[in-house]
Amino acid sequence: MTRALHTDRLILRRPNGSDAAATTAFYQTERAQYVGGNVPEFRAFSNFCALLGHWEVRGYGLWAVTTKTSDDIIGLVGPYYPQGWPETEIGWLMFDGSEGRGYAAEAAKAAIADARTRLGWTDIVHYIAPQNARSITLAERLGARHDPNATVPKPEDPCLVYRQPVEAS
Image (tube, rainbow, N blue to C red; front, side):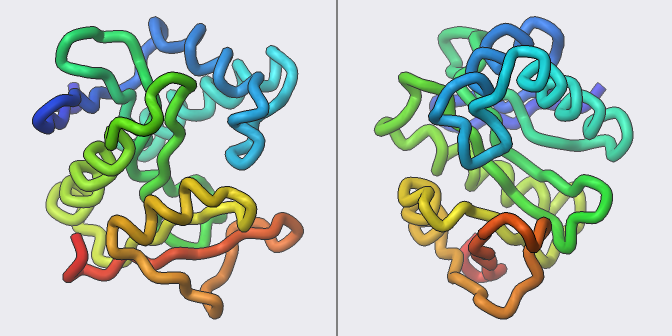
């Protein structure tokens, strides 16, 4: 079993079936429009299943983020590298009610450090929709810089690539 990551306020653990309802609900909201969401329930559930499958196939994936006081999932943050992706990514999806508390930055810092040490990743990017101002701000807060020459995962979808320099991690 993959261990969990612990920060001052958070636990990042492998997602499990108990996270299905909250994650599926998130993927059905407008908030999820930049991460393959704002979709019908069957597609939202498929997105959740793909996250679990990523763990099975790769041995890692987006961590379920919880607070130390509750095992209820508040978001997903971590390494993501599906088949055909041009580079290794640390991504984040924070659910309604979890924003504005610094949870995403805290979790992303832990996930970046873990990817560098446990997975041996030297190159890390963040793929961000151009309209997603909050994610752009977070990437910059983490020390990442926009790389306009980087390859995007889906050329048909507008995407900014923010590169995470080792010295900023």
